[in-house]
View 1 (tube, rainbow, N blue to C red):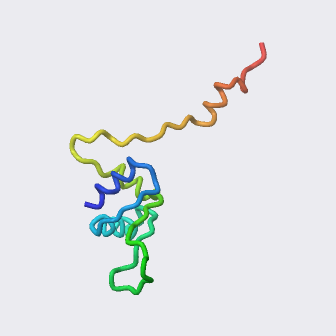
View 2 (tube, rainbow, N blue to C red):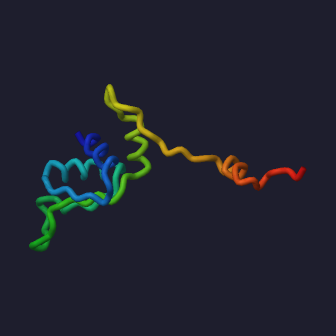
View 3 (cartoon, one colour):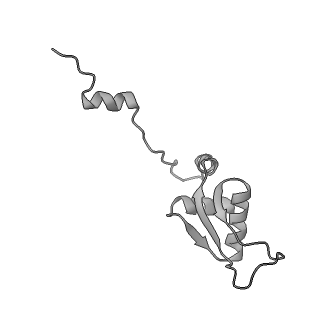
Length: 102
């Protein structure tokens, strides 16, 4: 399933390269759905110069891809971790910028 590959991509460092026909097809599906930014080889029937690489290179997971990962979970999976951001106003309060003079 292509979503399994998307989960694998989310857990690995990018860019990533895939060479098997099955993986390349899954990456084509993910790219067509707008879930990843990837470079894939031309379709088998297309004219390509000899020596052209037969590999797919995934450069990034899109925001839409991250949203799909957050919605897609299997039974027993831990919920996806989201980065915790401190609001700007709270961060400024901890630096002492808003302290009142005694």
